Length: 171
Image (cartoon, rainbow, N blue to C red):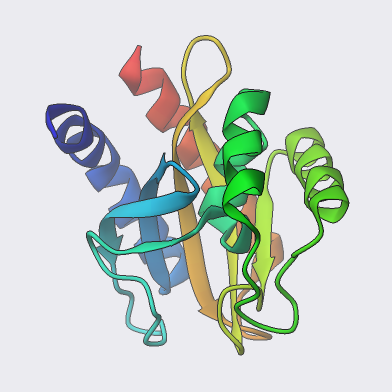
């Protein structure tokens, strides 16, 4: 709990900045087994109602924050997610292990994860991991909104910059 409280305190000003830039919903989450646990959520004036809530959980493989962390996690962590199964939440949810591995490699290469209606129909998300000194994900930050209404070219660099600053402030 103390570690989670510390993450929330460090991330709060950065999350506020993302909310101001995006006007969408901003999430801070950590991995907990095969799920993500939402530590903090800030709603924006243009953000839609989403299934996520503080203290709530979602399957890691179906969320931007989950995939951002899994792309920067030890193989044993990914194996835990695969062993739990990959439940389909929408028609776009990745449910094949090979496809998930390929997506995680792409995410690790580009530094940003996307949820394109994988966790809920009509919603999308861009997420970046918060990395420790060893390059392992300790949390992730995301911006979520309605599909087709998210200004991705403007948001992706902002999310990445905030995640980097958050990681630096942890050192």
